[in-house]
Length: 184
Image 1 (tube, rainbow, N blue to C red):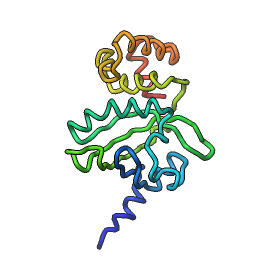
Image 2: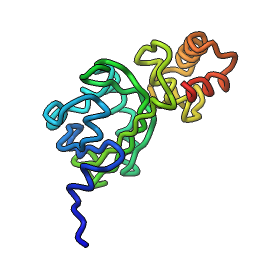
Image 3: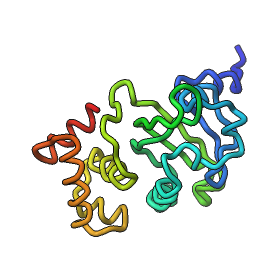
């Protein structure tokens, strides 16, 4: 039996996008459904359209570039934004994994998977862009100093954002906050 790779790409149980220089060159049906978009709204568009803000797109790119350059792969949980349909503008937690097709030039071409985590981890509080970034890195188990280095801000600034998150989620400590973030 011959495998139809195009059909496999289209029918994959996760969202898939092929990229070049942070632009989607192709995507599958699942990605379109997840973001409430048509292929025409995504193909040849910057990944920026999937982010809650242009700043988050830029900062995420700055954060992942050294890791992608070093390892050729990258994965994290982040908040993304639905484009259209009845949930237009809704933010949701998404697990994103990427692999460079050429590790010598990692942004030249890549393949990215997107998995909607909203069924298990709804976004319950209105968060700023920076709060979303700090929350995602807290869930990865990073300390304030490590988050500060990753986001190029001071660890004291990270602690301010963590305190805001704790108030918004009514958490008694960082462990409780992480638990509540993971649970939604």
